[in-house]
Image 1 (cartoon, rainbow, N blue to C red):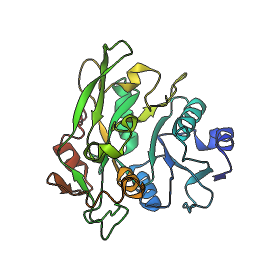
Image 2: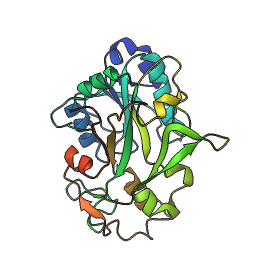
Image 3: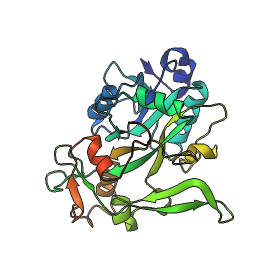
Image 4: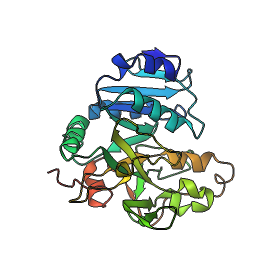
Length: 283
């Protein structure tokens, strides 16, 4: 279905948003659109909705919404509208050239993932954005190459998240690393975090804030108080693309590869072995 606006999608919510999990994909350009949508389809999402410019090609089986996704407010605008229209539905958001991985995703569907999380009385899953980048920028000048994709095996760290008085927030941490850390001089401070709550269950009153956290504090936690929970990753070429497109950085970065790079094998076990996500109690 092709919707001319976000409002048109919401008006048709009984068809488009009646069953989850639902993936919301913001298409910033035409790079790796098909591979992103295919990856989500293979994970078992009940519906995939692509948001972007009307001229972008999207497979006919994917719902599409004409929407300007280039503004900073586009993501919370989309997420908040859909969450309000689809109570109790599990949602995932990402951009094109981003790929969701969670423990055992090769053999377990995203519906099984959200079902188990619901049984644990959790409404959200912490995801880390793991930067992907081409091994050779001579052959892939935009930094995007699925065949030679690399990631950082080290260089990640976390800081306690505090409230406006400086007191630590319960079970909330800011995470950093990857290209945003290595090339931080080219990344605005407020965009350096790599933690995302990109899988969550819509509940009444839930709102995404401008910094991509949610207004309900428990949604922003990495685990419940009594044991570790599942975490996931979004493996993303988005930062590599931005650094190679931005006039202030593209000519200053000759290579993303460094001593802590390793080839990405497109399997969840590698991400678990590197400590970038964990199964919690899901065995």
